[in-house]
Amino acid sequence: MAPTLLFPRSLSFPNIRAQWENPTDILSILLIIGGDIIQRAVASLAGGPYQIAPVAFSFGWVAYGVNTVLSAIGSGKLMPEADFKSQLINTGSGITRQNNSWVLGRVLRDHVNRGPERERGLCVSVFRATTLPCPAAPSSSPTSSTKTKHETLSSPPHPRIPGVPLYDWVWYTGAITILLQLCIAAIPAALYHSFSVLTITLGGTLLALASGALPQWSSEKWACRRLRADKTKTVCLTEGNGSADVMVIISSEGALDIEDLASARNPPASRRKRHLTAAMSCCLAILWLLLLLTVCGFKEHTWYLLAIGSLGMAQNVLAAGVRRKASALGVHLEKEGEVVRDKVWNTLVVAEEKWRGVGLCLIPVFFPNGLRKEEQAWRETRLEVYEKEKEEKEGKAGQ
Image (cartoon, rainbow, N blue to C red):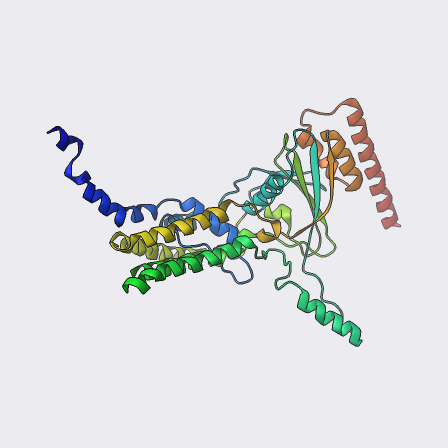
């Protein structure tokens, strides 16, 4: 009786061998875990000139499809919550707000992780938000005509349009992964004339691409106004007191309103299309459940599906968490300068001398308990100088 109790027939070696030769139940279980990774991967790659997010078919898509329905009929949002805590300060008004934008959080996270480690001090990096360059004026000169043509041919295929990301190696890795998955799925079709794996992979890939192509992804990812003509806004992004890095973004006409983007609110257009997004999410969730039922009944060549799902999961994890440039997230920045000092106060003083308002607005963040006597005197002196300049400007305008 003891051997029977310790080793029942259900756990005999032939059954274990059969499971390892052709695993079946594990596929249906894997399809319903990891939905949060899928959401972040789609959020990272969604948008772009062609509205295609190359997120490969993998484990977790069924769970993601169901969760999307809950979000669409509830909060109406597809984008995940910001996963990197940060705050934004307007240098003009001094107003500080919490950043709720997933995109801005990732921009700051990747900037902080890309820089060198510092045990002390503060680094203030200043960037200028770029906009679409104005086209060159036509010229009748043959030389200038040839030059313009050469510049047009050598220019990048996708200009730096605010809210339109540039394709990087992460995007192309997703496209290559999808092609590799289809190649693996074609092996049993070529060797055994079995098209089941190819059919499931092709169906899952089409559903994944359709899920990432919902129009609300782009409108919600960059849900903010553009700056009007003759208007410039400067904001600071930082983790807060104790952090070693500050990003300063200077935006001008036509650029994204970074302060508005930090609120991460639903744009009016997405509210009008909420019912359409909810209906499309429901349809996709039903199709994902049907695919899950199909995989549950799948009994042959399951190792190919496991290889395809594992390859797709590796791509999903890469897209969801890897560091990327800000331009790949639709925020196009050009570095203008940097200030690094061993002491925070010295960094703020130099930053204020170079970029007006930057050092003053960061004082409440890094010195919440107040300043020393000499530091307070410097602050009051700067404020008096700015106030006099403002009065003189208003006086000249009134004359």
